[in-house]
Image 1: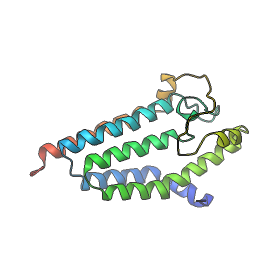
Image 2: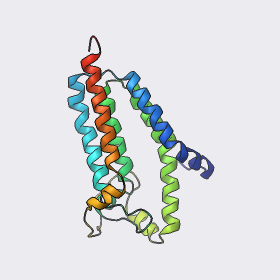
Image 3: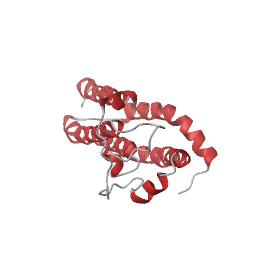
Image 4: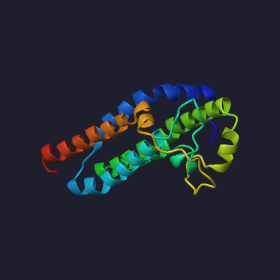
Length: 184
């Protein structure tokens, strides 16, 4: 699906406010149980781990990243976000949230991915070769991988700890909802 640049530019600016609306919707609709947390939290943790791994390799706007999870898929941060969201949907026990998250991914994140990839094409001539070898969203075993290693300094510079802190806050909210909602 192709998105117009003006639309992609607009939704790129709306990403953060849209995230706040999603959080409020999630808080309002969720009906977690201890069992749903046991099923959902590991999925979200896998997503956070993927995001952390990706952030530890990403050198934004200075070099095209081919190492770590970027050898398997061009957008591991977004795949990690999908896993975090899937885990939260499982933990929430509200499948309507799956539809809401899917719509946001389709109409907000996919256009932003296209915008970001066009930026990378403009910035790095070798992006075309990379895009021919590595899928946009479906991971596959790499033909080759750069030898660079994960770096905590990049993880911190990319502020990926914010995703982990956000998840911890969401998890604390779900636990509080279990503990303090009558009939849970």
